[in-house]
Length: 350
Image (cartoon, rainbow, N blue to C red; front, side, top):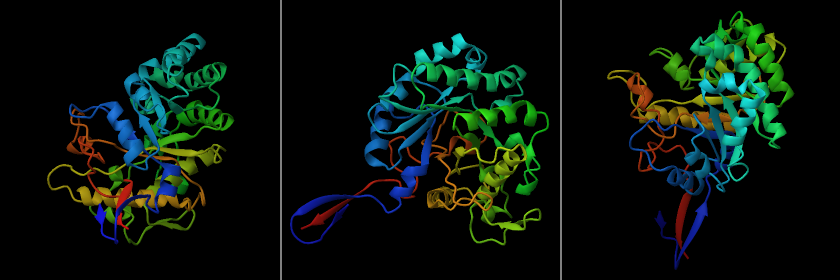
C-alpha cells in the first residue's frame, strides 16, 4: 500500500496492534479436501511471511505438508488416523509411528502436539473408543523414549461428549464415558501437561433468534440459574460447559484447547446469518476474545490456544454447503475477509 509522506519511498513493515495477542493463542486448521488448493510449500511460505498466524493444525500427518513447515517457525499439530489407534495402543506400534511420522521431521518442523484420531467418541466404534486412552499413553511414552518429551498428546472431541450442555453449570460428560474414558484421559492430560482438545462451534448451535448470542453481538444474554451468571457469548458458554464437566470429575485444572471453531461464508440459500460479513464478525470476535486473556466467567484470566476452521474452502467435502465454505483464504491466497491477520506493508515517502 503506497502512502505519500514526503520524499523517497521507504518500506516499513508494521504489525497490527493485534499481532501480539493473536500469535500467542490463535492458529488455523489446514484441511486438504479440495482440488484447487496451492502446494504445501506455497502455503507454508505464505503463512510465515504474509500472516501473523504461527501455528497450524493438520487432519493427518501428510509428509509433504509436515516437511513444508520446516524452518518456518510455525508450530504444527499433526493427527494420527483413527484407524491407527489400535496399533498405537501397543508399544511396538507407537514406537513405529513415532519413527515414521515424527523422527524424520522434528525438530526442523516444530511438531507441538500429536492428536490421536479425530472426534473418536462420535464414531461409536467401541474398538477405537476402548483403545483411545491406552493409545494416548503409549504414544506419549514412545515420544519420550525417542527424546521428544516436549511434544504433547491429546485427542479432539466434539461437544457431543457432553450432556445437559445448557446451562453450563449443569453440564457433565456422557454417562458411561465419564468414568470409563474421560476420567482416565483427564488424569493422563494432567500428568503430561497436555490439553483437553474440544471443537466448539456456536455456528452449529444458533438459530434466527439466537444469532446475536452466537456472534456475541449486544444481546440480553442467557442466564445460568445454577451460578447466577448471564452469558452474552455462546462461545464462552460452550467453554464453561466443558469446564463444568471436567470439574465434576475433579480435573478443572486441565488446560482446554479449542481444536476447531469457525463460521462459514456460505450456506443453504435463505439461511440467515451466513455471509462473509458474519464470518468476519465471528472470527474478529474470536481473535479479540482469545487474545484478551480475560478468560470466561468460570475460568477468569485463562487463555485458550485456539484453531480457526479453516484455512481454505474445501470443495471435495461431503455434506451441507456450509461444510465446504469455512475457508479464510481463496485458493490464490487472497483473504475472504479482513480480520487483521495479514502483515501490513506501509510505503512512506521520506
